[in-house]
Length: 117
Image 1 (cartoon, rainbow, N blue to C red):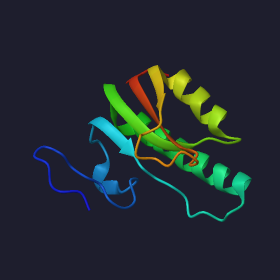
Image 2 (image 1 turned 135 degrees about the horizontal axis):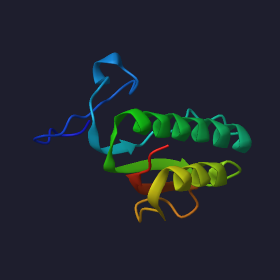
Image 3 (image 1 turned 180 degrees about the vertical axis):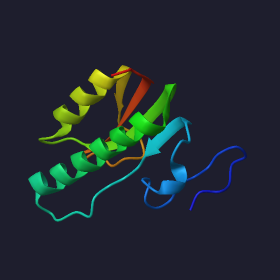
Image 4 (image 1 turned 60 degrees about the vertical axis):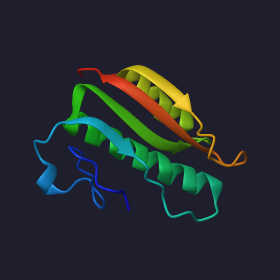
């Protein structure tokens, strides 16, 4: 649970909810992670699918000068996720938080400046 922050609406649950239609955000933070099966390529595909869904959400919701932060995982589909972000945003940076375990493939990508399609 996130403590309330003045001027911030936290969406917990299905980010595709109808109540968000037409709302434009300065920041979209996607900390989504799939239920893990233990099969690396299956888990990677699921994680990439969530990242792509979050990018699609940004297309509808993020202001053009907004910031998008998305959790992703290194593996087979990481390059596809990164390539799409580079096509759709002006600046893309990959970051691994110091709080993340060294052996974890968890990575965050910060993207700025949504490009028009």
